[in-house]
Length: 125
Image (cartoon, rainbow, N blue to C red; front, top):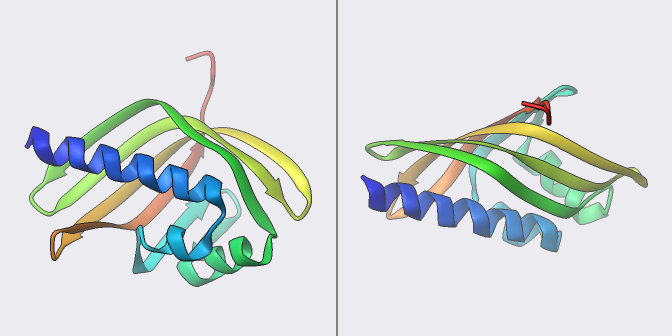
């Protein structure tokens, strides 16, 4: 099981790198076709999220974690991390310190994220 956890950790690090590259095609490779992100402003689909990236409405210049917990149950992985997401949205700078919970499914030997949920984090804890 440790091998799967390490594999998923490396996968998530590559996804963070893809996010900072702001390359929608590369970012999309880490997501299932029906991926969704849940945040304080609601639910966003994969296609909408990638359109925000492609159009430049959303850019990232930082995506990192200072705490990560991973559990793997067969072909399902759950990754909970705390860290910073920063960039621009609609031309305005943002820097968010948040918890990110993502569920991954492994099919045909490859991990894909099916859902991500973001929650603000307290830096003092």
